[in-house]
Image (cartoon, rainbow, N blue to C red):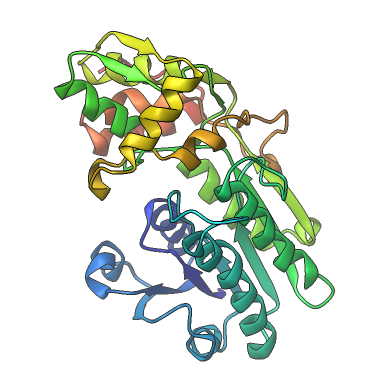
Length: 322
């Protein structure tokens, strides 16, 4: 049994990771700004939900006290513009990792797992990818003092995702989808596989000082994924792909929409200029779950059964259509 602090534990990936840690009887400290947002974690055994300001260095050190490992899942997809990135990206992706590393060293935490992004690079076209790269650099700089592992997922799918579910919801209300960047390439990875890689990586000495790409078994264009989401949710709509210039202007207009409706920004447009794909297999022997083994069930709104589809796949049984 280990004591593990998870930052970003109330989010999409965090809840799946914490469930797996609890299954292995680890004690989990889940930090959140508002306890109300983590109600789904409060009932889990061995989970301590703590309200905290994770951007306060002293608060981080208190959170990490007596912990055997820290997992940083914090990330944002949109933020204010700036060069090389805006203040929101800087705060979440660069300043926070620096504070996490410093707090780990002060508190004597020996192990850090850090979530980055596939194709993060200092010269990447988007603020998101550039800021993620600088966050990685902060973790790498402390490798002589702290056993760290970096994970770089492509887009992550699963029952509560804000990717396939968004496209499915849009097609319930729109007669036609005007799609920006229809040829952008992704290699979606299942949230359960991402969580499993984190859990196995905790005790894998071979992962110290390493960075791993996390991708699914197949590449898709954005058009294919949007059409798939509409078809499997029962609301297929015609998808009209926009050219490069119109894609950019659609993203610019969407930035003016209220936050729940702001499904795309210019920075997202720039991120999609880089194919989010990799030839790497999942680490630690984790088998990659195909999109088709899980997504059809939750896109139809039958979330509790989606896990049975995953279990059938890994047991070598064909997923039954619902």
